[in-house]
Image 1 (cartoon, rainbow, N blue to C red):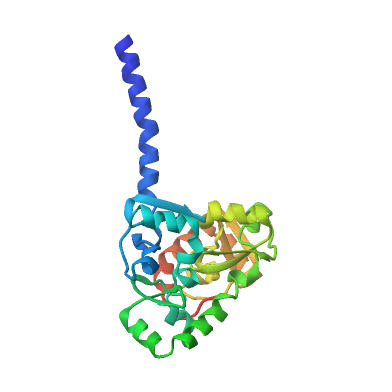
Image 2: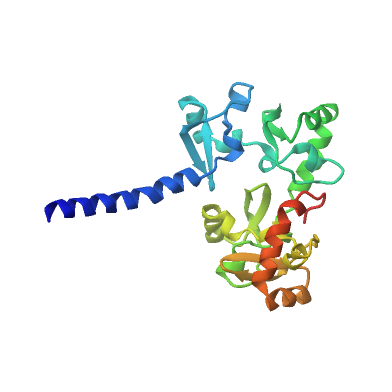
Length: 262
């Protein structure tokens, strides 16, 4: 009987341990695992050590060594790339694209780190860096989803304008939150609150189209927020939300590569 009890408690302990290990493994590092401090400290793109990590505003960063972690923890904003890590040339170029970057391709200008998607982009940047930076700054300053608070859809059940005093950069976008509580919730679980499909109309995405969503026309389904072009699009969505979401989820990986953003 005693042996069985011991066996039971061992199994229970393992059951409790395995989910935590899986959760740890599932936490993807920001910057593809590159050390955010190394751009400035060494002038190089250096892969971080998974054993030396820091968490900042909902993201996990791998640091190259103890000194890099110490300096990053003291002033994260000093080291984090501009524009939420988006490609500076894409954002500051003709289309204002919000493209992900390759952290191995970077420049440091006036003590700030700028990332790029490919080497070709950084070569273009080098021809007129201040122009690209100025345009990218202007575009990035415009908040996502029209300045509406992404948290309010779920916590307040309505569309609420955010306050610039509670702004937050997250997942390559600038968001305005309604208040301090909303900002705290957003930092803790950003992917829970950011509207699906980068704020494009869910019904349109399901049909292979990119229509900018109206941030005042929304639905929350299974803890996910969806925006719509207008009330008619929302009505169509609500007729069969499961099938519409399935189609939109299938179409979005390809549609997200298009040139315009909401």
